[in-house]
Image 1 (tube, rainbow, N blue to C red):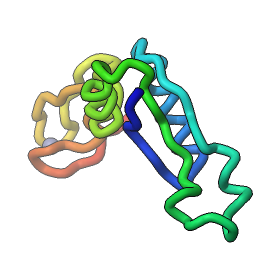
Image 2 (spheres, rainbow, N blue to C red):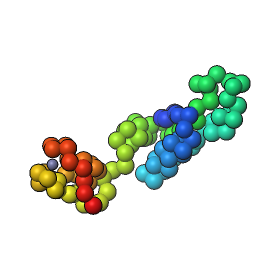
Image 3 (cartoon, protein in one colour):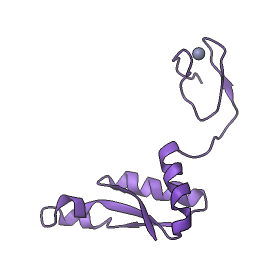
Image 4 (cartoon, protein in one colour):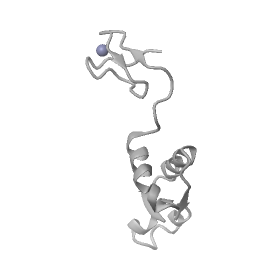
Length: 101
Ligand SMILES: [Zn+2]
């Protein structure tokens, strides 16, 4: 078991857990009810946490949480400068133009 994420934001914590599970990493949320005890415990003790069950997957899990899910959808080209872009980007890295629908 290894902790890979913690936050006071329960939505973010559950989102992180879902993201890992979608990638086949077994993970669980801990402390998600402790927030109600705020004021009685030191704040750092009240953060909800995501733990991966297999410590060997922790590194992959942390990278996934840092970089987001693997690319989905087709590559696209910047409408302003024509630069070919990988699907995970929402903004052109060359000219800064936002991706258009
Ligand atoms: Zn561009």
